[in-house]
Length: 128
Image (cartoon, rainbow, N blue to C red; front, top):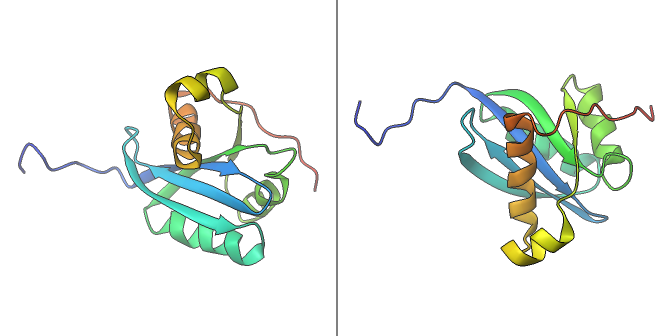
């Protein structure tokens, strides 16, 4: 094995930045490395696409979803019904986002890393 080869655990965390018409997701490996990102529609077809995509990277530890009580509520319910753990991730501070740059992809990556690092631990309320 060379120095540049990465040992993957097969476990991933998915972070999701939610919006009214689209959601942006990022998948991180168990050490926080970004493996890929995906933009989906906010309907059942998009949610199915997200689950299939996430599973293609390995065992999903959890989904870190922003806005679980608003724009992310339907996704949260869907993901839970399919047997996955969901962690509510607080939206980033707006002032810091402006200073560091704003991007839906960055927000999704940060959501995944917040779960992985243990900064986000809240279990969202169920609306089911």
